[in-house]
Structure formats: C-alpha cells, structure tokens
Length: 215
Picture 1: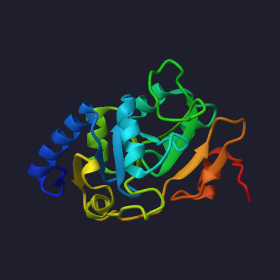
Picture 2: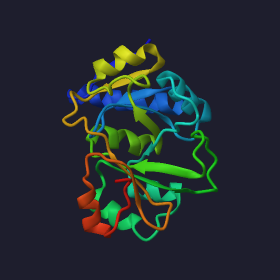
Picture 3: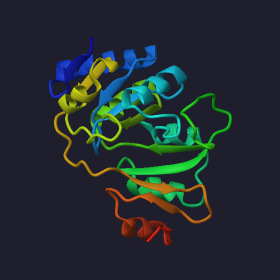
C-alpha cells in the first residue's frame, strides 16, 4: 500500500524522509518533488529497482533515467570526466534545472539501461529532494508519470498515474515551474544541446561560449 506524506508539516517531513530513504535502500520506488516536476526515483545502484522504475513508467531500457545527486562530490564520483566545461556549468547552475550528460565512471557497478557508457546527472534545487538525496546517495529519477502522459506537478497527480507501484509519495505541494531541465551533452568536443528547458541556451553560452544546437 502506497503511503503519502505531507512535507509541509515539519514533523511529518522528518518521518517522511526517514521512510522514503528506507524504501530506497530496500529497492522500492519513491516519488519526490523537484524544482521542475515530480520525479519517480530508485536507488541508482540497484538494477532491479531501476527496472521497476522503467516498468512503472512503461518505458524500456532504451530510455535510461537520469541520476539526481545531493552534492557536487556525488556527481563527480559518477562521471569519468567533466571535461573542460563541466565544472564551470556546475558552479553557475547547480543546484538547478541543468542536466549534464557525461561519460560514466567505468569502475561503477550499476545498470541504468542502454546508456552507451554515459550518465545524465543533475542536482535539483528543492529542499526535500536534496535532503532525501543526501540520505540515499545518487538516485535514478525520471518524471513521475506514465510514458506519454503529462508530467505530474503534484504528488496526487503522480499517485493517480503510478498508484501502488510506488512505496512512498513525498508531497511537497504543487511545483512552481513545470518546465523540464535543460539537457547538455558534454561527451563531445563541443557541448551539444539535447533538450531545451528551464535554462536558456543564451545563459549557457554566457558561461562556456559556443553550444551546438540542431537549429
């Protein structure tokens, strides 16, 4: 039976974070608020949990989830190399709605799907998400909706779509902005925009100069 906690209540929030962290460690799924939309998350290092996440969304291994982190140190441990631009982008936009695609650390034992040796990593600007991530470590997190359906902007919307496939719902109220994160690929010599989002390309170029787009 899924449980939903009101994180606006300080006492309930403390219990909620404990219950959510315990669920993640057991390999169960949780829904959490972020600075963009609600996300469905699992322990990034538990392959069965990541598979359950993809199954809950109705997705295959060809659409691996991004990884959210609670600290910059956690992010750098996941990647092989940030390249010449990664640290400047992190300094400018993290925590916030910028997802960086980097070459994954080859020493890590995990299975996010068909990643082709990369990982999409982000540090969200939301206190509930950051508190949970600092307890659990890196989590595979995708938007909390069935594939093809609108992204959830409330915990109730997420629960309507995902139901009992999720163990714990962290209700942080309605998200203030449902614009998705900007996704930037740092695995090539020139950073390439993969998805337009909350951070405009012009702001990225203001930090690192040239950004390739499909325009």
